[in-house]
Image (cartoon, rainbow, N blue to C red):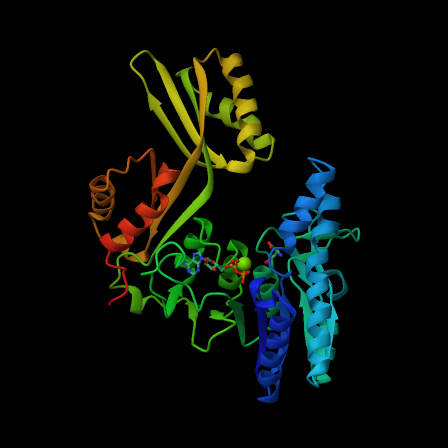
Amino acid sequence: MTLYVYKFGGTSVGSVERIKAVAEKVKSAQDEGNQLVVVVSAMSGETNRLIALAKDIQQQPTDRELDVLISTGEQVTVALLSMALHQVGCEACSYTGGQVKILTDSSHTKARILHIEDQRMRSDLAKGKVVVVAGFQGVDEQGNITTLGRGGSDTTAVALAAALKADECHIYTDVDGVYTTDPRVEPKARRLDKITFEEMLEMASLGSKVLQIRSVEFAGKYNVPLRVLSSFAEGQGTLITYEESEMESALISGIAFNRDEAKLTINGVPDRPGIASKILTPIADANIEVDMIIQNIADDATTDFTFTVNRNDYLRAKKLLDTTCAELGAKKVSGDEGIVKVSIVGVGMRSHAGIASTMFQALAAEGINIKMISTSEIKISVVVDEKYLELAVRTLHSAFNLDQAK
Ligand code: ADP
Ligand code: ASP
Ligand code: MG
């Protein structure tokens, strides 16, 4: 008997009709003799609606209360899906994360899964029931409700698949697989039959929100066969795999981008040991994640120091940097919230020279100014003005021959 964990995202359960369609799909998989655990997200838009409600009451609600609030979206969908399954004659039982129980640490709004109890699910499965589990949520040692970060239902699904040693984990969404880039930005994007964990991890962490980063980490670590497919159309989707052979010929597998970036610069800092740490320690202490960092030396023994943070953290980071600037006697702090990061990703980059120059030439030919650059073994990222996002993605997509054949 094959055990599958299926996950349906917000759009896939966005209306009563769609929930009924999911129930039909699950029923037919069960009728074929498979065991099923189904993870669902909140109905599309619901998590955002709940966050907006909270912000109408308090600008900075505590993360604990926020978690109590935003976890309700998924509780609605598990109940509705379970009812829809009953309606088509399928035995099913719905659970919240806490009921399962999915034990997490206590970092509200970005909790990490520590342990999953599988007895209750196994006993339901043994009785022929479909187990329906709320994505995105868990419970900490003290019994507080926690959530796993935006897009966290992907991680719930993969973690359940790992805990239950499922044969495959299927992520059903509103696209029919992982594409060379977001098909909403570049309609010529191509669906990939396979992508390596390493590349998928890089794509996800560079902004491709088709899978939450942690779900890919989890799948890689516990060797969970993971597939991204469409809820609405038949097809093989994209398999995330360890195999590289098929992709070795492709230099670049995909293009990722992130709109949530902001850049901060502190100019004219005295150039002496310990400066980087003086600048970044207060930022780290405030739990603000720093992404790219650039330091440049000027002629007059001072240095300019630039880094990027999430746009949500921009104002807090700027305030901290203003204080540091005064303390260090630096010249000034400037910032830019209107930037984006565009990245090319591919394991083929390791063994090929000249990728960076192709990238920079292509951008230059379109008059796109590069503000920052960062590289690793399998990616090159550039920061550009946000008005160039679409143009940059399409230009690079074509420069690296990723466009769909007509
Ligand atoms: P769900 O609600 O099902 O979790 P998401 O919105 O989180 O769906 O993820 C699916 C979306 O990810 C797609 O609609 C697409 O716009 C976006 N996306 C970004 N990059 C890619 C990519 N490389 N391939 C496919 N989809 C991508
Ligand atoms: N509902 C949550 C979100 O919108 C989790 C998810 O959809 O995966 O981020
Ligand atoms: Mg998602």
